Image (cartoon, rainbow over all chains, first blue to last red; front, top):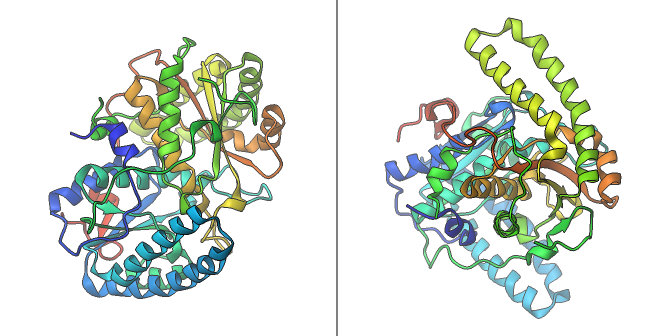
Length: 218
Length: 218
């Protein structure tokens, strides 16, 4: 039994994961958490491919490594202009990210979340701005999975970089033409402490009362 | 203290909400849950407008009512072709949805989730298919809020219909040009039983092993 608020308030991005296998019943509970998530019209327009086969994990890992390299280059270039605290934070994240990119294939399970937009009512399409509402029927499940990992003592991190290589991922995992990918969550026991304290903005920087920019007062 | 799995497995869409106020400390905990959610690069590219002022709730309610009417018309038209169980389920949902549409303004709080795509790395844009990855940095927080409501005995439901009237909502709530809306979550104590058993697909219809359509075996 894990308290809900305890799980939420200590859910960190854990990027250093041991190769030790995840027991079947533990993985079953983590996946059940995804199935419980609410989705628009209860349609559940997502599927999860739980990748454990070494050759397939290697394939995903190779694709991820190349994408990560590109991604981290951009951040490294931006670091000299950062304040010291932010720069240190970034250096730490990049180091952990390098570890993940080099060890992706060794993580015991990679969960690839797929979705089918034909089964979604995407109410913010055609508004002339980036649409995100389709995510409302998948990332609820992703968050449940990550909270369940936290409860089970597993580390995990939500990655989306592999969307840049979606076609290659689809071919590797035999994903049909009308299904797409939106999250790749490596799961495993933490090398270091794993979950723990998190750093977030204070509530009054995230919440307004009644109208934009009106101070939130409980 | 509420067990994580207990909260997840009993989180229902609750559409009949009492007008009774939500105590400040309870609402504070629900909003804190949003703040804890993971977001891409820990940027937290979302803001929540917690609408309690009657005139503003009425404005949202009027907009919602019109959208709901359109939405339910489509479902009513499709009902004759449905199997009996699905038709009964739909009739129940529509009745609860009618209630919400008629009482939106009376719910004690409506949380309007806003996001700014400039602060998001949307890795699935430009793929020639609907993009949803931006949602990965907002619906994690929405799910945390709903789970917190469940823990606090509050009913809630994730709605996105008001995106169809985004400009009107932005004017009403004074939301700046570069911020958009993606979820409208009315919150209140349930009129009926509120949370409880949920109906979801069995795990083997949602999860595959290693590759698409390969049976999931724990």
